[in-house]
Image (tube, rainbow, N blue to C red; front, side, top):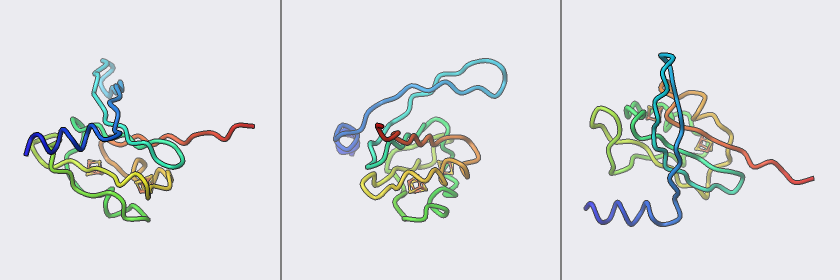
Length: 108
Ligand code: SF4
Ligand code: SF4
């Protein structure tokens, strides 16, 4: 099953490093970035505790459970990036800042 997970991650997803700190000290977490039609969606597995709130709040139902584990050994989430409208609702509701959504600015 491990090979299957690696293949899925390799299919167009990119790793991203993010710095997040809530204690004044910087910790570095590795994120997995998915390209969306309007930008990108990144999950930081070490921060995702698997509460499912983002799945509940996503208006297009494109967030689901991954077979990979996040914090505390619970399953983390992943996104079906093609259907993500980059609204950021998931990121706003995540209690652990485990999701980052970036909009691509239109060129003028
Ligand atoms: S709301 Fe945050 S912590 Fe909860 S499942 Fe979603 S990404 Fe993980
Ligand atoms: S940015 Fe919006 S559409 Fe995309 S996964 Fe989050 S809640 Fe769903």
